[in-house]
Length: 336
Image 1 (tube, rainbow, N blue to C red):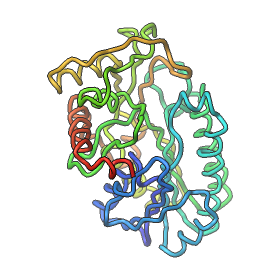
Image 2 (cartoon, one colour):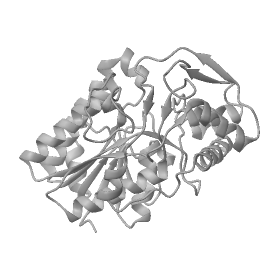
Image 3 (cartoon, rainbow, N blue to C red):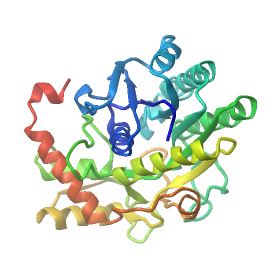
């Protein structure tokens, strides 16, 4: 076990809050920092300490020292691909420059372990599917590039300082905590399953399908959907490996190794809800590859982890349950 606490940046957000739950459930002590620009303070489990702060804040080294932090899980950042195309400087500021500051704080405070939430967008348009970690990284949008730049920084810093790291390249994260403790709460979220369950609960009139002319089995984009709780547990397993092997670092795909098209996902939502969600066919969005599916053989071999929730209908059910629970929260609390 770690001889100190784990700092989770962005721990009031979607994936970060699930990582907090997984860490606490595994017996780790946790401190969360989040500037609450897109996160919610009520999403932070009460067992964790919480500091409202941005990752680039000059006080971060003091927080690391005060709480005896020995590992960082970094989730804070901006994540909307089309927005990164229209506002690239925002992404290089929030994802690359801010993370550079956080890594420097980690080095200054002597934090030996760093886990980074990277993305399959680092691959750009893949030459083959499924995609392995050894395939070329050629991002086609600033979001993917901003994440790849952070991977490069971590590689170089680990070569110069006593710190090891794991970069988990996420594919499409979906679902919610099966116990109903957290879920995707962001207003205006762009995740397909989140949008679809919002439509199912009356928050949206329809679901837009961006692109029907991709070279896929039904013309719509194909993605590898991973349950957020499985992903959170993969982070805990990766941390345990970093602790056990302090001289080793890893870059690993985080996915299930199979993909579903947009239409197949919407079919699943129709099955689970026993209703028909209206589908609006629109043109492609900037920066969207046709197909992103993980070769997940490396993560299965490298860390002590295996998917527990790799069923599309189950992922939709958990997302739907959270969406219904979220609708019951007081409107003022949802917007805090």
